[in-house]
Length: 300
Ligand SMILES: Nc1ncnc2c1ncn2[C@@H]1O[C@H](COP(=O)(O)OP(=O)(O)OP(=O)(O)O)[C@@H](O)[C@H]1O
Image (cartoon, rainbow, N blue to C red):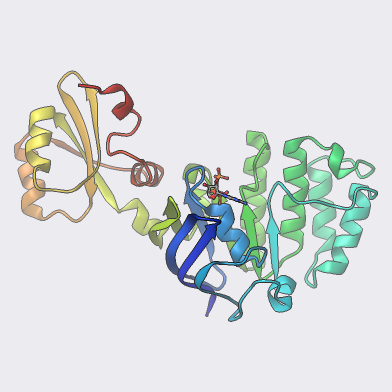
């Protein structure tokens, strides 16, 4: 069953279109990484799915219903981000106690254990926490709520690296013990790669790729060698990325669908064929130019 189905989904803020005719489905009980650069439209898309924002055209269904202001969707969904606001008069301990009444699968014992582990002060107020501690508290709510659809928008924002690792480990353990549909947005695939089953990569409001993490790891190959040989080899091949890597040396990334003959040609030209990390593939595919930042410095 698909928990989220989008067909030609579009969102405009005034005249500015920020989600362009996006179509995809998210299956039940999978962890999907929503990956994209700053301003790609991740938060907008997640807020539409969570029912916080109206879409402009196309169709979006969550649990088979339009999510906007929908009771079924809000009862089954939690949206965690760093703008979450809580009752200012309540301490963290009181906030945890009241959270139980909002979420039907709330695990209070888990919330308390995580709260202790991350050394949060029960008498503290949410507004007085550091940015990283607010993210930690929000994430505890997100995990303990055990909502069938758990949406986390940059959940580790502000957390130190140890806390991030602990949080992702807690998320994985929770997910294995209590499967649910999780959407996790991040700029950094590296950090979440081992958790993910699927990746939805977006660029400037458009879907770039939606595939399993294994397929993404296998999506492209790199070739490196003398610039003229690299140029000769990629002559009729569409490149994903092309970069100077030293005096008369270049590195090109192409889709991993070359024929055996083409790969043999590359070896004959003295080119080295390498794998490309999933993080690099995402970075190259979402770059504004084929040469990345080097493009800014190459004026010739
Ligand atoms: N309320 C709004 N009114 C007008 N434009 C908006 C509004 N919210 C977002 N945008 C614009 O929509 C685009 C997508 O923003 P969004 O916050 O969804 O991206 P994002 O991928 O989450 O970015 P980041 O990774 O930087 O948080 C950006 O160009 C942003 O300026």
